[in-house]
Image (cartoon, rainbow, N blue to C red):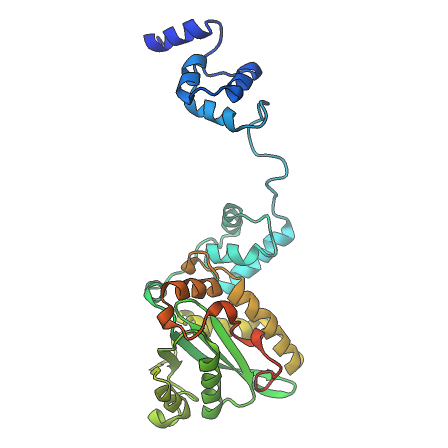
Length: 328
């Protein structure tokens, strides 16, 4: 193949015996020490201007070997792969959410290595429903203040306990409290502490159309308290087990995974779980941010939706003052 005359002329006049596109240590040192422009040096040595820019930025003129650097990539061990598989099968979280959650235990885990591991074990794809995608689109357009509230029943050697949980639909921020009273009065007390704790204005409370939230219809303690604080109360029938909202999914995960021998042991687990969930776990739906990070950014953009600065507030059981929450 015959090269263009202009390239032949440049190569012949500068270095007739040198192969175009190659650099030597002497040429690299001359490029690094020269103050001429990239275009001038590229024409002089018959190389690409990007190559000139690369050697100008380098501290050394040594030609590094191609390929991955030693120690930069690590293969997953059998124990790490088993941890990934069990976590995926139990939580059914998307790829990015699994990556965010597992990075704390496997620091060298990358998104691509996680995907290859899931493909090897045949669990790289999750079944998606129309309701799930619809909920994600709605959540992305909401502002903080729409809460999903539910109650779960937990058994311990000390008796029966009730776990009230509230999750903000926009930020995924969670507030959880365990109590001995699971009736309408217990639900109203939980809402009162929730209103006093969260930094944003609560505009909507979505609860199951069941006891204790719908007990007595519009005259229930929970509904009366919602009206007193200007909160719209929406009752919804419980969805199918496979198509539950985030509150129900979190409650199911807690009931399936937490095994405790006493009430104090469960309270300690909750105090350890909530700070990690609210302040360290990143979500793909939140563009890789944590729920707390989402609230801080929302406060900077729309401070009128907030009652207090979220930077100085730790929401949930992790902020328990000298007096622990009721029932703990």
